[in-house]
Length: 169
View 1: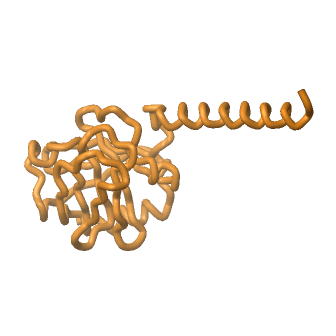
View 2: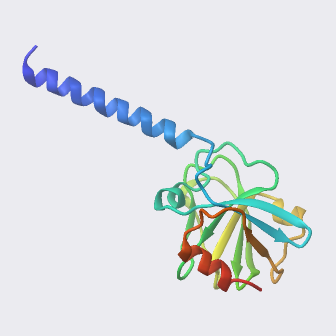
View 3: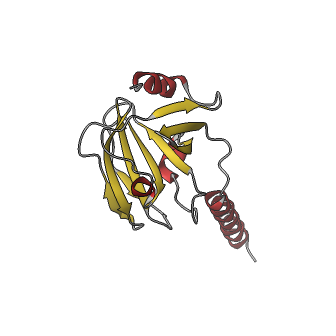
């Protein structure tokens, strides 16, 4: 075996190990590093993880098999809302779009479908909450409804905290 063959084998082994480690990290269900907020829609409550880092925002709920009842993921926008896609999703979602402390739009029953399924707010939105499909209808969430958001820890970056304060109804 010559040096080139050994080098090639070592590179392939390292690439395989890196791919394995990435796939394990991608599939990990726990996201305890994300800030948590409580979102109150009248008498109904959602405990939401806030996707903060670029990697968390890209991955979102992708790779998970489901969400526990009363759980969701919140995305906060600094400018105009961006398109949201169902990358690596395994279950359908409701998207609850928020602006100025109120529900501005509901995109119900968005099916999983990778990057081919893309959803965008039809109006102004500073945030979107993703919850399991059917949650909004089941809990009577409607456009114009006020939403109270309470931080549950100090992990939320200052820029996102400012957006939350601006969004008070």
